[in-house]
Image (cartoon, one colour):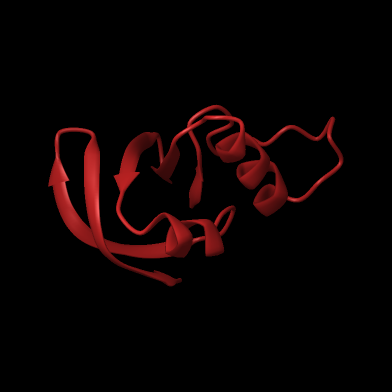
Length: 78
């Protein structure tokens, strides 16, 4: 799931919005875009516009993994 570094896979229900909206609000507030895969979180680098389009959704990421960071070359909805 593409999400933000603050919420991870658990978005706040207090704001009363969907995961997509919550992710976009947090990213706009300065959080990083990340991929959550099970218990692992990866920082995503690449086309921010394409990543934001899939915010809060499951996605297939293609890129280069370097430590905890993925340089994204392709992202599509899962």
